[in-house]
Amino acid sequence: MSLSTQPAHAAAPIRFDSPVLDVVVPVHNEEVDLEPCVRRLHAYLSASFPYRFRITIADNASTDSTPAVAGRLAYDLPEVASVRLTEKGRGRALKYVWTQSDATVLAYMDVDLSTDLGALLPLVAPLISGHSDLAIGSRLARGSRVVRGAKREFISRSYNLILRGTLAARFTDAQCGFKAIRSDVAARLLPMVEDTGWFFDTEMLVLAERAGLRIHEVPVDWVDDPDSRVDIVATALADLKGIVRLLRAFGSGKLPLAALRDQLGRDPLPMAGVPAGLTGQLIRFAAVGVASTLAYLALYASLRLGLGPQWANFVALLLTAVANTAANRRLTFGVRGNAGAWRHQTQGLIVFGVGLALTSGALAILDALHSAPAKPVELAVLVTANLLATAVRFLLLRIWVFRSRHPA
Image 1 (cartoon, rainbow, N blue to C red):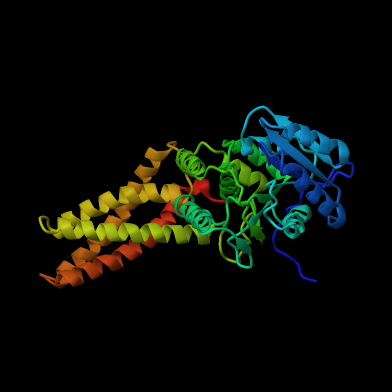
Image 2 (image 1 turned 90 degrees about the vertical axis):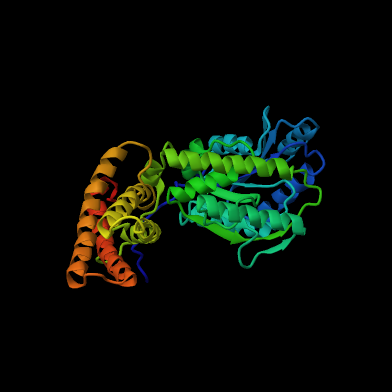
């Protein structure tokens, strides 16, 4: 028997008078496809799913006979329910039904059932057990099998590359219409999700990642629906606007992700002798340090053309120190918003003084040993002194300047 060092992260208790799984099918003007797809889904769940389930048809402002079809299905099949919203928006429909549902696990899938239903139990099983917080079907994961045109394949992969480059997303497929979430997680996460349309999925996943939640990915078999009526251009523009909105929200620190992390997030596995969060901070600090060092050397080399070595070193180090403190404040130690920014910069300048003393001292020693050292030698001495100053800088930032941000 093996023991885990990971603290238990139990799912919400299953209520035996309520369904374990609630599968939401959001629809808008689907009078033709709705009935055969829901009956197929119902037959599959009845035969293959080992827990109590419900299928909820979430009609968002259909103008055809979709509401009548949904009502008939709810009357004929006891495990089917129908909800009608007067406003359009897939995200709005999902958010409404999920926040009203009494099921333990909440899922959704597109009405065309493009995803093979055999992936449904692997999707929700980690959520039922409490192992994971959200689960997504991925058409881009290893092992998935996808049939779709080159245009949609290009758009999907490009969109996910944009998410990785702008929002540092680590999940592989944001827009596959096959996802699930635990109800206790949804109750805390969904109030932060603003989008009511197609960007809803992406926003939910990005916020979940930032809050330290565990996202389980399932490779799926997926066949493109040739009759899909999604407006690709309008959807792409809305997604880009959503990305910009999230970047602004993260920059301003207005989202209470820290509170959500405290409630639901998973702490890193403990390592003997390594303080919590140190590894990630070192990696981010190193990246900022490399960029700062390159900027410092470029500034020093350009200023050295008109100034002596001490003044060139002072100006270059001062400018990069201010930028370095701001970058580490946000990226390394996760401080958002303007509160305390001036105090942090003041303390950062004191740390800058320590770095200045180390680098200036190194230059003074070099000058004492050699009256006219070669430029490569001078730069090599400065790089060595900067490495030492960088190590001292990280320790001071962690234990003094940003000490209030340390994980408990």
